[in-house]
Length: 406
Image (cartoon, rainbow, N blue to C red):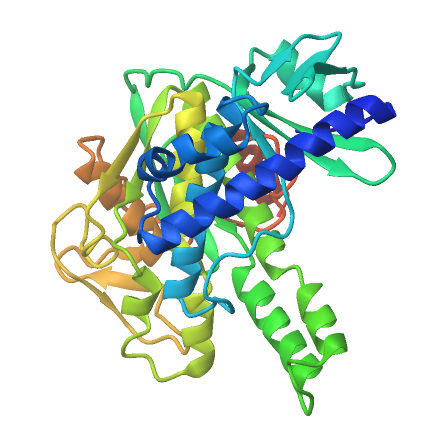
């Protein structure tokens, strides 16, 4: 959380001195890591601490620790970017400085925040916004680490980190399987399957057409083209959908004390899926569908609420009948992939996304009988306007009311 505080000239000057010393130590730490080919905080600190302590005797010693942590993070990030071929320099350049603080360098109270400097401690008195009190009063604790950055006009930007202990997972009373697809996510809640449309296909293709219209006949190095491409919000829109969807699923599982069942997707899932595809548009859609991101955000949100997560083997979940264990034959329907198939033994119809839910639940250890002859097995209710919904239960009730009206 960022707090902006305007301070007097003496306080600003004391923090400016710390920033200047911090920059020098940071540059030395980065140079040491590059020359010794290491990104380890422990090795960098062991190599530079004694020399930096002699050079900067008035600087509190813990600034050298936090500087080495900062240098280690910058080097590690630079190495990752360099491996991807996106590094434009031979070493990370120190442009902007955000001073890292540990619990020895700052103290928090609701009245003032004290920061250690070369001339002793200085005090700042921020005005806390509404969102600060929301976190503070809901049991979130303030972490021991913090940061500050100096701005123009004697303004200090102070960054506070909130942390919350992860609750212990409970003993589940049931299972809620979730099947991730390119343009939808299917969920089995209260024994009823429901398909939630994510509109990922429209978002991906819409922004792809926008990029083509911006770059056609123009260089991507042009300043105006760069600005327009930078203002595109494809990643933000997809992330917003993923966060809201994860919250809906986890809330339903938490209220019913159920466990979430997901497919244990391997690394680079989209790359494996598009390997033999010839349709360039379909390859683009699958590659940008972000299956792993959706899975990871559900797992991350589940940890926050203490909801257990079961990862099952994804193989043949959509092509095996959950009743007879035989293969389901899908007939071409003119689309990218047939959605409804027929069991070779029982001849009942199954929707691809629904049968995956029942198989995932079965593999998780749930022996609840699978309903035969249900219309939802091959024609599940599909919902598109769920982004503002409060819960999955309310969505299912609303769909039922619409069906009754029809």
